[in-house]
Length: 384
Image (tube, rainbow, N blue to C red; front, side):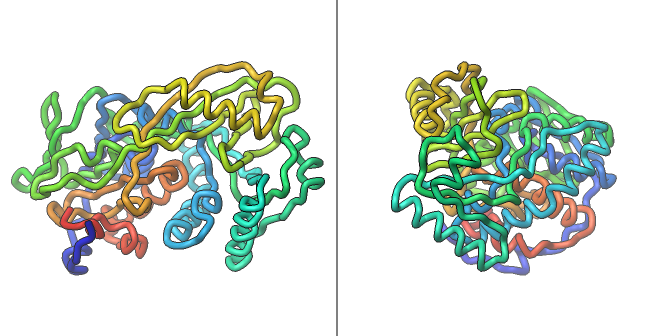
């Protein structure tokens, strides 16, 4: 549903917050907690499983806005902002945590094997050219020279600015860095309700209650399962299962991320590759399935025939949180102005986590309203 909303209600001023409860310790929740704690807020993070154990555990860490939003529009605008700040965010985090992350901006290669696929790549190239983004068109022989492991394809588009990061490692590092700045991570606590309690916000769990000036709801696919005072309908967030394979490659390894119509492949320096990802409306079923594994194995072997000699290492599944329009839901609640939504990032949680953290910290600590909230407001779906 789409509702009419009052801009004055939507962007009403609330006193800057210092004591903040973040619900959800996935990649978005940990990024928000880290950014808030780094900038001096008192932060508690609560999750019923622990850092990075939801959709993040089945993420390949793709940083590829032009593959996720090839037609442009608000999603691409937001995703490009996310990519633009990634270098500085990772540098700050690595400095804070004294670690080195598996972060690569070595480009992505999207291949096309049909006339329809070639037409789609040509359209993407035109979108990129209009934005002044560097992209290189490769014909069949060019592609063969670049990636001899791939099966013959009609054409490919190389986008050098894109890449990937180790999502699970990134999430754990952000959680650790947040704790170094004083944040407290509370595990094995299932949040049931968020409400106003006097002058404070109350987060009711199955183990008791937490209070703070503000609550950030970053519970991914479970965001709509948590009761919010004054909100009659659940937030429209649908879990979409994505299954991912990890393989130990045999023979020459791909040199960069490769996309096809049926799968993507992310090569790591240790000789393993990640193959993803299915898109399944399976409710809250987090199982890996024979059908999902078969689908991805067939796709990767079609893309790179040498994959048939790879060693199967693992299969993982995660539930990506999707809004009806596939844009994230980020912004103040109209029912509880001290509640901030940070959810529904769907396939772009890794890419958008640093940007989400920054705009929320700006809002809560400096009372700065980012223009992005116009597109991501929860009130585009009604009174939430």
